[in-house]
Length: 109
Image (tube, rainbow, N blue to C red):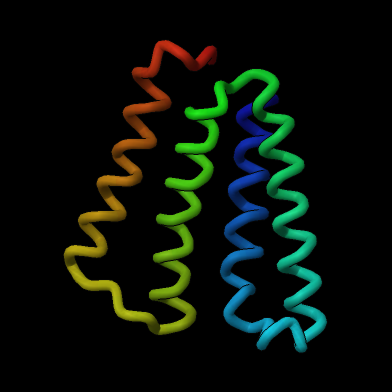
């Protein structure tokens, strides 16, 4: 269950962060609501995952995967530039998360 909570925390954070571009100083109510609910949900699910996953590991996965997804979403939906070096950096982040999950002795599967 902790991995499901961590996944829900990541998805909630990615939705909230990708909606930030459209809030226009929190004057657009619908995306503003999505941002607030998304971040609240993200921290709630992250806190639930911490009952079984160590804080440093959970935070590294939560932030790393979130950064990778947000970068790709910004590139696709907001047409923000992401060059070859950006893709290499994102692949390093994802590789780091995979190594952490597969080989860390602090994680109980």
